[in-house]
Amino acid sequence: MMRRLLGLLLLTAIPLLLVGCDSGGTAELPEEEADPPDTEEPSGPLRGLAADRGLTLGTAVDVGALMNDSQYADVLAREFNAVTPENAMKWNPLRPSRDTFAFEQPDSLVAFASRNDMSVRGHTLVWHQQLPDWIENYRGQEDTLKAILGNHIKTVVNYYEEEYPDQVTRWDVVNEAINDNGERRGSIWQETIGPEYIALAFQWANEANPDAQLYYNDYSIAGGGSKSDAVYDLVSGLVNDGVPIDGVGFQSHLSTEYDAPSDQDLVDNMQQYQSIGLNVAITELDVRIPLGSDDEPSNDQLQTQADYYSRFLNTCLFVSNCSDFRTWGFTDAESWIPSTYEGYGAALLFDEQYNKKPAYDALVDVLYQDE
Ligand code: XIL
Image (cartoon, rainbow, N blue to C red; front, side, top):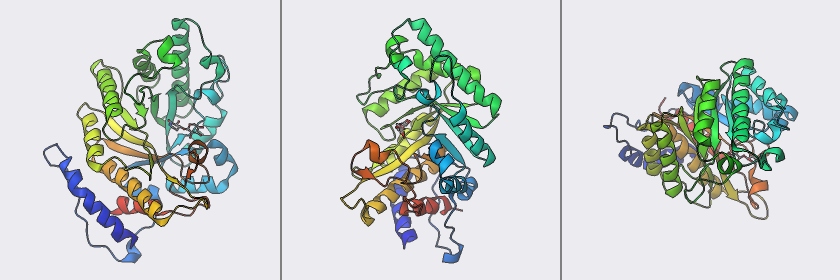
């Protein structure tokens, strides 16, 4: 039943996706084949199915949960082939002072990833949030802050390449540098160093590890709109200037209350980056649900959520410059949503007891559909 419903949703999406294919029509979504007998349909794990599709399938990881909850660690290793540290590589935990780097927490995740054959997406080298006070309150010379930022980026990227070679394959170098109105966001970096901090950050990261894939990452840019256009302008400017950037991350924090970007907009947006030689990635997908007093999502809400998850994955698999798809956490027991968006929750693939939700089955169906 579930599979038939999703098949229908996918069929509805196919014409839109084909219209979005502007490269001479060589790439076509495969036609739905007749369902194989039920016994042959896989029900997971996701990572085996993802590997068959050449897909990096990742999730954000809370290092505290990883250390303290064996079920969290087991499900993570079973289902995903890539991780992103949810917080552990941000400035605040990583840089207690100008002279110190606290690598223990992120190291425990990178070591876990190494043991379980998972790659790591480093997150994030430059952001306006989760900064330690000594940076937040910095009121000094431009050159000094430039030296601090350059030292941070080069030390962190270099450390991971030396300690865990080839493990941290991608970095979110700059995060959320554009405001919702399309202007440059004010931040200590922008105010003190000036707009060129972005190009410098990519150059420093590239110097430290020329093999890593370097990304600009932001929210509300998966579909069209003024912010999306502004990010494209910024990034295409970097490409024109020869700045070493490899891709753009669409965070993709969605809500069942609003429509998700249309398949057409998503394809168009991904392909415009392809036309300037860049990859795209879905870096932080979650689909929050407004919950009633019983805190339980309705079946309709869970179906809408499953539809959004499957459409994003389907689109990523469809375009040739997307092969990295990640959720922002995997269990509703550990998600940033309830504490950030009051009254919302249930945004992820597993419920609080680690039961698979319809969104999980929807991803299995998408991964399996044209095998
Ligand atoms: C969030 C984490 O999930 C929270 O635990 C933390 O308190 C705040 O940051 N965009 C990003 C992520 O790039 O780093 C943010 O992560 C979510 C929005």
